[in-house]
Image 1 (cartoon, rainbow, N blue to C red):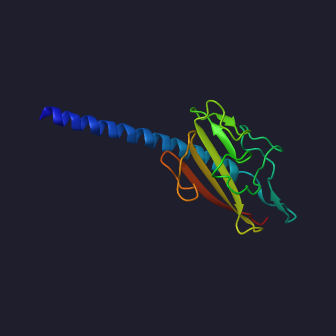
Image 2: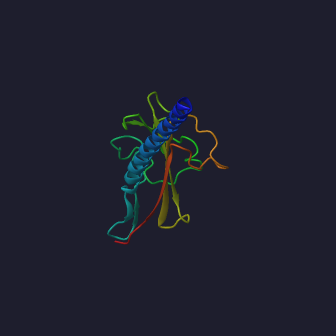
Image 3: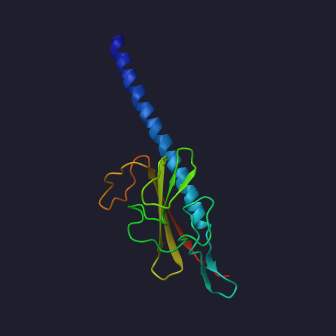
Length: 167
């Protein structure tokens, strides 16, 4: 009787350990997604004093520190930016949270997480953009719904809307 009870406890302990590891990975992915979202939302998107629309279209946010003049900024992303690594809309992070850049479509050695983002005008040509960030462990993702966009375990997905404000 005691051995049956101990076997049940061992199984419960194994399940709890796996659940803790998954929760830790998901929480870390959420923190990485929030960092990228804040970085993207911090880019200039508004009007100048003359009333002309001003958008940061060239800051490279795939590197730390971000680099003005060498990236995609808040340019509209190509179709599929969240489903595949698209240079200019992806970066890689090691297990300690250090940025490894995003100069290639293939994760560099040491990459623990992949961050992908997209920027879409809503509706096209309007003064509002939708920013999405998807963070996942750097491993084969597998199928995640019909478009490959659903969140899988240990992943984080955030969405935000940014609108130009009049001067």
